[in-house]
Length: 231
Image (cartoon, rainbow, N blue to C red; front, side):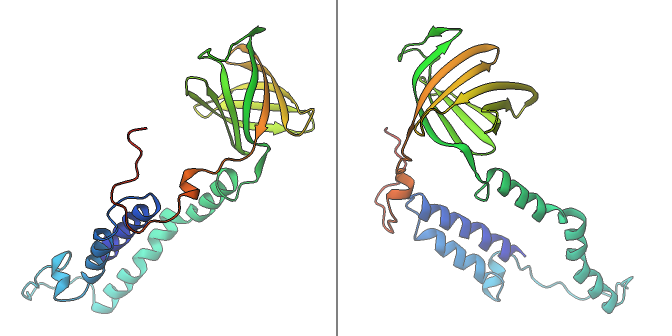
């Protein structure tokens, strides 16, 4: 059991190192091999095998066959009791906000061209001005301000009524309604109240960027971690 847990954990470390440009490619697969070999004697004594104890005359309350049945059945009972709904919950989550979720009707990154609060235009250097709105899936929308602060909302978009209802995860009872208009495919306007303030935003759609994580490629040898600390 210790070997299986250790091997799975170190394999995850190995995959993270390969995917994110770390420098531990040589040592992490070595740890995976050590963990995998730990279930075999004599190397198994390294991680999880203790020396055998001497036999005693203690009388077992179960026969050997009954004990085997109990041990074999425990994992099944545990899965039924604790994990019977886990696959369904995971699948539901993936369909709501994961890779199986349909794209939002307003999917994409929208850069803000005009922004007003309470009828008062906010200039490009105003820290409270929105910089962009990101509609990823049918579950979440992000409004990012010029100062970099992000406001995350759960949303429901009604294409027929041309409305977007948003609320925060921690306060689902406070629903905020915005009307949207899309006069052209690449332009969008939003009008409504967010946190009690009347906002108006005019946005334009930008092509999906080529993120560095997807374009840098795989590098088996990294002289230094690619963590971009100095940016």
